Each structure stands twice: as structure tokens, then as C-alpha cells.
Image (cartoon, rainbow, N blue to C red; front, side, top):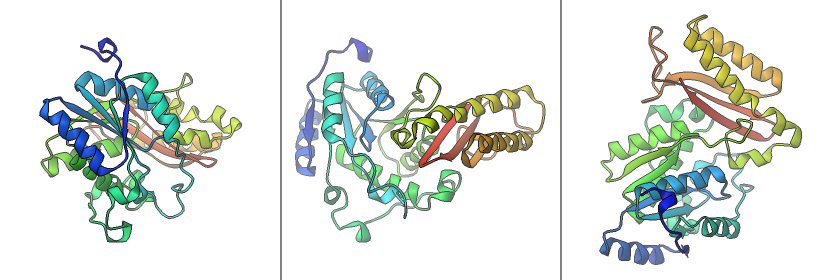
Length: 293
């Protein structure tokens, strides 16, 4: 039965590990399958599309809301990141697909404090692409996701494809540590003009918001040129970077990688199975996007 065919459910909220374990324990006794959608809150339609997907795969949907300090670097927006728990819970209750919101405090996730916590060290890919400018970011993501998996013991972990590098690295984590969970990914949810939905889009000024969709437009244009087999890929990427700068972006990177593992493709490799990834600043907003060829 699809998510739309399932009846609306009553949302519950738990805010401590003890309460979470009591709830999860009762579910395990009834052999319900559980899907986890981890978020940092300030939910939008992109997040809600993942809740729909989760309900298609499991009997019970758990949404975690936790702004994770270990994935923010020095000078990043941890203190200013939007925290809207009441609004988020109201939105999920209206949607009627999520059974439980788990919104812990920092001490519940890191009981020994941030300076004395056990840490996950991710492989080399975590230092490339978005990781090259955000040292330790993916280690922090992996550390919090592993804790959530240990606490909730879901059958399904639902992740979005906008953070594609994160998706690939978490798949690697699950396989590497032999974790008993299936990862399901949801496609990028976009605004009508093509801009990938993101909490950080609200950092854009009205003028910047009009420019922001050009990032996706440039990726679409680049993908068509690569598929046509004209100029070499690196030349086309340089042209796209230059175009973004002309529009007012400060691009961090545009790269073409293999979609299966984000490895660098051979020069003779077919465009099939490749993905273009990009990150660029526009004003105070760091935008990421990708498009599969």
C-alpha cells in the first residue's frame, strides 16, 4: 500500500533517550518495521517528501530533529541555524505520516560532552568535494547518524539525494560496519524554478533568490554538453564555473564523478552512470546541487 493509501497517524514526541527506548521497545514487541528520517529540523516540503517515502517502506516512521554540533566547523552557522521544533511538530502532525518525533538534547546524544566523545573517522572521500572546505564535517555526520541508528534500531534509513556525498558516505558506513539497516534515498525536491529546497535558502536576499536557480540551470546545461560529446569535460566545467561567477556566485567546485561511489571517472568513460556535483556561495547561503547524467 502506498503512503497516500495509509491512514493518518497521531504524532507523538519524545525528548529523552529513556522515553525513546520505551517507545521503540513497544514497537519491536509487535514486529512493526521502522523507518528513520534524520533531520536538523526547520522542515520544508523536501523533508516531507522523505516522510512520504519512509511510510511506503515501513509501518512506523520516526523523524529525528537535532541540530548536530559536530558537523559544523569553526565560523559556520551552528548558533544561527533555525530551530523551529514547535512549528516542525505541527507540520508533521498535519501531514499525518510520522508516528514519532525524537528531539533530544545535546547531552542525550553526546553524554560525555563534545570534547570527550567517541568519534567516527570517515574514509578519504570525506575530505573531497564538500569535505575539502569543511574538515571533519562528514565525521560529525557519521557520528550522529550512527548514534541515532543505535538508539532507534530502524529497518530503513531514509536520506535525500541533494546531499549526495553524504548519502554515499553513509552507505559506506552502513556496509563497512555491517549495520542491519537498508538505506532508501529520495530524489531532490525542487522549487518551481528549479532551486533545490534547503533550509539555508532562507539566507538568500530577495535579489539573490532570483539568481539562485541559475546554479541548477548551469548543471542542466553542462550535463547536456557532456552527453553531446563535444569539448572535453574539464573545459566544459571551467566554462560553467566562469558562468556562475558572472551571475554573482562564488563557486567552491563543480565536479563530474561516478554516481555509484563518487570516484573520479576515466577520460574514456561513458556519461551513463556519472553525476555532476556543485557547491557555490551566493551571499550568505552555501548552495549545493547535483544532477545525474
